[in-house]
Structure formats: structure tokens, C-alpha cells
Length: 307
Image 1: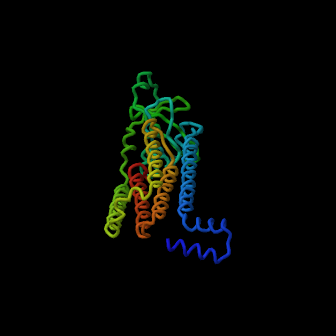
Image 2: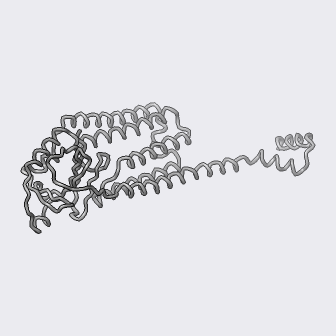
């Protein structure tokens, strides 16, 4: 009460009107209204950004799934430059793409693997396949890119029969396609070791961060309510894309995966900074996200890309 009397006495000395005095006192005693409005407006921008990125990602995903139309011929005079292999149980569709950035499919740019396939290709003999062979055959899509930039799309039946999608011709390869699928890459062990090193480094960084700043341990998943909502949106999106790939046996461009992961990483840093977490923990979070991305890249290259 004494403080209120002093405040009113000071306002009287300023020669303000009663309305001006009440307005000034209300602004002094009710600052929480302004902070509430600032917090509410701060959440609207991330919400719109997340929604925009989700819609844009789905549009990009639809765009990159376009079929590629190229002339299909069987010409042994051309040299094979790259080979893309994708398992496809649907005989009426062709889903292998002409890029090593499509996930998940196998990409071969290794000279030894290409030379081996080229030799088998030169010795291939044309055959006629029956309806039962077509119906019961194991299916792989194989896209062959030549040095003159032409492409050939083939269905692989029973691991040895190559069926040209465009010309409807079939050829028998002496060596099984398994020799290509399980090709031994000398660099594979190095890629896998690097991937596991970055996974261990990620765990080490987390251990150091929680050891030095134990009070942030329980907030590792979400620092604020807005952060938890953003995490839920991104996890649902990642899960939906992964389930879609598994369900339809399709491929997705790696830039979409890295783009969504980058958005998720930025949100991690943004909301943790907004929650007032220490600068050291923000740096640790960024390093953890980077280690996850590098580990995923090394492991995927070791298992699916041969160069």
C-alpha cells in the first residue's frame, strides 16, 4: 500500500490527468499481457514454416517419381557407364531411377563390376520366354546407362533372364545377377567402419553433454511444448515417408531426406535456444545431428553404392 501511495503522489507531482495516471499505472502493474502476446506470435512463424516445408516436400516427392523415357536397344558396341538395380515385385511397373541419389536402390559405378557385367552382356543369347516363366520369375528392375547417355530398361527373371521393357526381347545371361547384387567392393569395409565411428562419436558427445550439464538430460527430446509439437510433426512425416517406401517398394531422392533432416536439426537448435539452454549444449546438439547425417551417408554408401 505504501508503494501505491508513493506512486500516486509521484503521478500527482507530474500534473497528469486522472485518465493518464490510470493508464500509466495499468501499464506498470500488468506487463504479463505483453509477454503472452509475444510468445503466441513467436509460435505462428515456425508452424507456418513447418506446414510449408511438408507440402513442398510432398510436391517434390511426386515430381521426382516421373518415369524416364529413353530409347531401348541391345547394342554390345556401347560401353556401360553405370548400372542401377532395384527389386520390384510388380511386373507392370519400372521403378529404377538413373541416379545414385535415389533411396533405396543399388548403384554400380565400380569399373570391375561394370566390366564383369559388360562381358556377360556381350555373350548374352536371345531366347523366348513362356507365360509361366514370366509369371513365376523373380523380378528386378535394372537400368543400364551407356557412355553415349542412352539407357536401357530391363526386367530380370530368375536371376539370369533379361527382358527388355521396350522391345519385349529376352536374353539369357550365363552368370547370375546375384554376382552383381553381392559384388564385393574393396571400399565397403572402410565406409561401414566410418559410419560406425560417427555413431560412437554421437554417443560420446551426448555422454559429455549430459555429464557436464545434467539438468538438461530430461529435456533432450523436447525443450518446450512447441518443440514437442514440432518433433511430433517431423516424426510423423519421416514415418509416413518410410512406410510409403516400404509399402509401394518405391524410391525417394536423397535430397528430400536430407532436406527434412536439416529442417528437423534447425528446429532442435531453435527451440533449445528459445528455452534458454546453455550454448555448449546447443553446440553438442548440432554436432549430434551432423554425426547422424554422416553415419547414415557412410552406411548407405557401403551397402548400396559401389564406386
